[in-house]
Image (cartoon, rainbow, N blue to C red; front, side, top):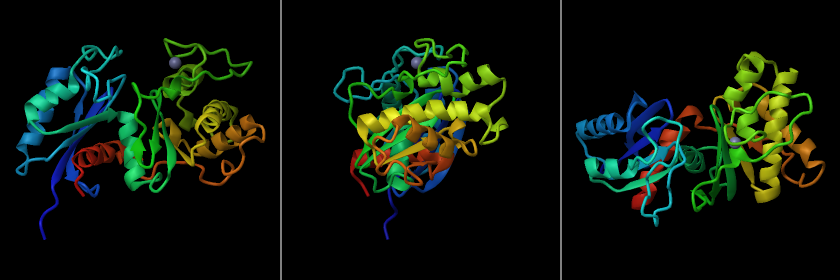
Length: 295
Ligand SMILES: [Zn+2]
């Protein structure tokens, strides 16, 4: 039997980069983790990694932190926009990789890659309309329609939807753009700034955890009202806090006030990612495969 072709995947995060070589069925053959230093240093190391492998890759899928231009029809496709990460604003990520590796590249956001991984091999498999939310150092989301990230002008920024603040929560928002957005109130840095501890320090019925669950529940309620997805996956480090998903679903239902309760109250409507921390890199590999149409 002929060997399946190999693909490359890159998950570019704000602090680390994961590169991997694998097959279209989601099997990882090797991977390497690098710190996210300067763009040119990272690109050189990535090109070395793929070129050292004895069998060349057929295509490369990239999931990158944003904001990044993911619309193939735009002249600056694959370029990072204004970002807090020093040296990366305006960097032509797809161009730099294409020049060094000479393979087709499919680039999406890191969240879309993780969502795509879940749609192909995990919790969103077979789900017509799904949302993948990541709650970690930021809050981001991807909408998956029939297994594919929904095409858009840029990409969704649902982590910056405005929420209703708890009247006694006077903590400053950690988002520099908004005073009441989900990321500014409920992402890891906001939790740490408000409580002085990460959410994992709290039990499921502690008021600190319930406050964060209320904010995430508001976000999920807005997504239900806007999109009516069949399922919402909550990923990211904060998302994996024991008891948070159940508390978030309860808060979501409370915020919906009895409206749109059909299906949304089912156990598992909000669920964790099945691929865990590997969703992003497996999704990036799957992006390469999809680009080439190989199976
Ligand atoms: Zn914001």
